Image (cartoon, rainbow, N blue to C red; front, side):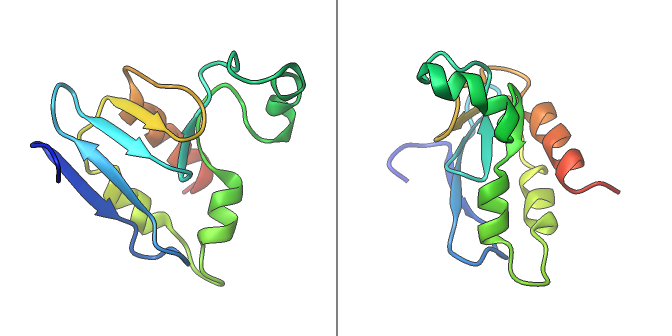
Length: 120
């Protein structure tokens, strides 16, 4: 890694390779691409996107990306175990390629997204 206190981790069960970065300083920062998305606000979107996002599966919340999940889950498989491993990590902030920076409470938000996506 190009700097200390950083770990590159990989999903094990995805159809295509996917990884994420954990920066272990402060409360921990999780850097994601498509798997986990946080839409705290829509201010960086155009008017049309701001209007329709809540209705097409992108609420003002932290979510497991629904399109990503559909494309990356093996036929007849589940990515539950990959997210359970991710949730063993310590992080309080989240930076995702989709949405906005979440500066606090990210672990609890990802746990809630997991519970909604993988009930039971």
